[in-house]
Amino acid sequence: MSQSNDKNPSNLERATLGGGCFWCLEAVYQQISGVSAVVSGYAGGFMPNPDYESVCSGTTGHAEIIDVYFDPQVVPFRDLLEIFFVIHDPTTLNYQGNDRGTQYRSVIFTHSESQKTIAHAVVKELEEAKIYSNPVVTQIDAAPVIYPAEDYHQNYFRQHPGQGYCMAVVAPKLAKFRAKFQSLITPEFR
Image (cartoon, rainbow, N blue to C red; front, side, top):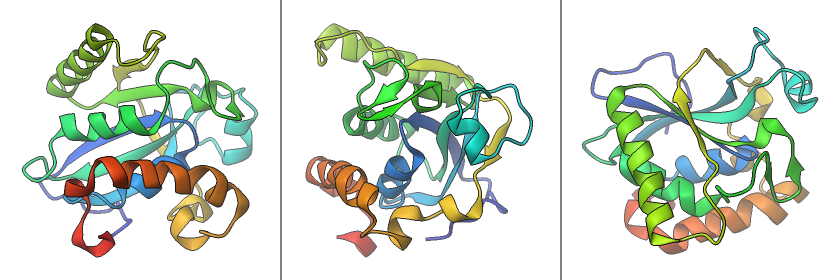
């Protein structure tokens, strides 16, 4: 599975999601059939070309996000959102677990009117079904400028599965995804 976003064949779409630390989301979305690339990055802030330290300071306004390049004929955007709402808590404002700050907010940056419509419909369905005991606070906005994170953040879980954070936080989210969405996992990871 390629991790470069240099080429975006015309059949691919782009989804941009933030739900806590990008390492968690990246590890999950890399295992989905129909996903050709996942790039960790920053979006939604006001500082051009932010770096990890400035984003972590909470002063740039950026969220840690992943950019997912996917084939909608294999995995529809709606499926990507259903996974998103299972692997993070969309009811906590500006935090996930011990990760606190606006950079960890729950956010969907849409790349089309269709994505915007689907995102709002999924949130409405979650609210109506009362899946969560608290309201969904996921922000849904048009995609702003997106900045790739530094190289050492790319493929983080794959490169550091034994690192403490990966074992304590990323691995359980990956296990939750694998248990619920087995049919969407690419054969490489089954």
